[in-house]
Each structure stands twice: as C-alpha cells, then as structure tokens.
Image (cartoon, rainbow, N blue to C red; front, side, top):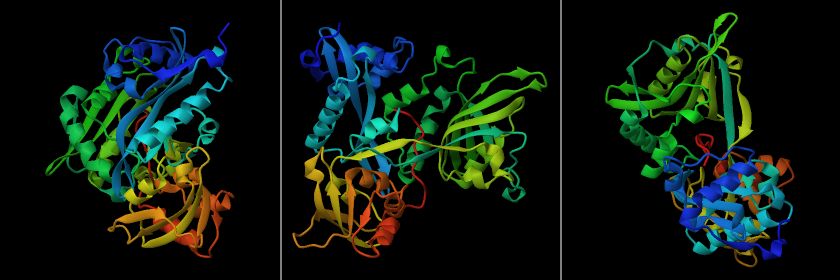
Length: 417
C-alpha cells in the first residue's frame, strides 16, 4: 500500500532521473514507456525546474517547466513552459498535484524572471483551479483535398517549391521560423536542443506513415516558407485514400503560404489533408471556394497563468492608448491582488502597470485567470464580461480594454511542449 502522503518527499529531480520522470508521465497518460534512446528528450529536460514527489526511491508525481520565451502582443517575454505534469494512478486524490502546482507557481514568482506560465491542458478543469485560463484557440482541419479548391483569383503559382530532408533544411527552417516568430503571438523560442527534439523522427513514432518531409518555397530573394509533413499511405475499395499529415507550416509572405497549401492540397494518391495546429484565423479558410471542405474544428491550445501582473502588463503592447485601473483577485499569489493602473500610449509606445492610488476608482474587476485569458489578445474582456467573469465598474471601460488588449492576428501555438 502507498505511504500516507505526509511521508512523501517533495523535491527537485536529479538530472539522471529523466527516465523515471518520463515513466510516471507516460503511465499517467495511459501510454507505453519508451526509453529516450537518442537522448533528445533528456537534452531539453530541466531537472532543476522539475518538481517530484517520491515514495522512497520511487517517483510518483511530477511537474516540470521549460525555460523559453513566447511572443506576446508587440513583444517577446520569458514564460515558464509547464510540462510533464502527472500523478501515478495509485497516488491520485491525495493533494499531490495541488501541492506541486502551488509550489511551482511560487517558485516562478519568486525567481522574478517569468511574468507568466503557460501550458497545454489535458483537461481544462484541472488547471483552472490554479489560475490558468484558455488564451488561444486551435483550428484543426481534416480537409477533403479533392473538394478543397483554391479560389481562382489567387492566381497562378509563383516562385518555386523544393523538397528536402529535415536535416538538410534545418538551417533554412530555423531562419524562417525566427523571421516569422516575432509577429506570431503564442509561438515559443526554439534553441538548438529544441530543434533537434522537434525534428527527431524515430520510425516507431510514425504510426505507419512516411518519414517527415520538408517542403520549401523559394521566392525571388530566397526561402520564404516551409511545411513539415508526412504521408500516411492508405488504400480503399475505390483506390488510393492516403492522408497528408501537416505538422507545421511557416510562411513569411502570402505567396509562400499560398503555394505551400496549393501543393499540400494536391498530393497524388491522397484524399485527406490533416492539419492539427492552425490558428483560429488561419488564412486558408479564406482561400478556398468552399471552406466547409476543410473540415475545421475548434479546440484550445495555450492556457496562460500570469505570475506577475505589473511585469506582464508592462511588457506587452496595446492597440490603442489606454489608462485603466483594474482590480485583480489572486488567492494563490496575493502579490498580484489589488488595484493596478495600466497606462500605454498605444502599439508603438511602452506601457506601465503600477499600484493604483488608494482613492483611484476601479474601471474593471476580474480574477487573475481573466487577465490570463485576455493577455494574448485572443479573448476580449467584453466576452469575459458576457460570461460573467469580468465586472465593468465604469461605463466604457469594457470597450476600451477589449480594443486595447486585442491584436491583429489570433494567438496560436504550433507545438505541444
């Protein structure tokens, strides 16, 4: 029988415990544990940021974080990328996850570097308890490629396409990703170890599909975009029924975006095109003659938790000049609670967020989770107010805040971490 939870040891993982952490994580998600034979997973594992509960020599719960940056409206900021959160099945319902998440948030706050934490949620109800909120929507597509036709007015193909292996195209992909990332809210930084991890493609993980392929688009001045994709061969009673699975598509020009999609929607022997991590305002929705044939479905991607309200609100930019007093409630990190005065000159000006004067009148009142939902510009304060989550204390404040926090493109994330 497991020991009482009071006897379990909460501590940091050691570097040589990566496989043990991974074993707990895989087991909790009902997956088979596969050793990290190539070492690419261990290369991005940060033991010094991974909290574990141990019952003797056995790890029974984990919660990790990765040190990376994320693009927010008008800026790039450090963010704790929360990952490897799991509790062994026989140790559930004993408060271990709560203790892990509380400790992790406190550690992030006290380090004073990352004004926000973010994660992909297995279940949203789990993380809302800790002040996280859904901040970016995800568009997944299962397109009938024989029916999804580009609009004629998009014109004839321009530039050139070429295929390459991930290894051969790595330098170009890195450069293109870094060109695109500053404008794509929700995209995370990738160092060399992360690129190696992302491009790792062991045959046992392909599920019968081909090796990963890279398609590059070259414009007049050089590469302007790439797509990573693979083919899953299938045959049905009517003949070929293969699937094109798109892992990610990065384009720095409209021409690159158009031509990459033109190719992916026309691969011989394929019948469907799967794209799992599009943005909610993906341009392809407006490029085909019948959008329904793309089979789009909405889901969530990034969940955001603000760990330092004044730092987070000061770092991002705002669509219009703003001067608001926001009253925030945060029971887990009381340093965030109180009245904050947010001021900004607009998208090209710097912002500031400082404690409001004692007599300052409140414009909006909300929980810290509501700030997290609106922070990336994908959810408006007006929507949150309609949901009963934000209270307007001064007429017009909702409209001002909704416009100020908005951004031209929807936030998105193209990788699970």
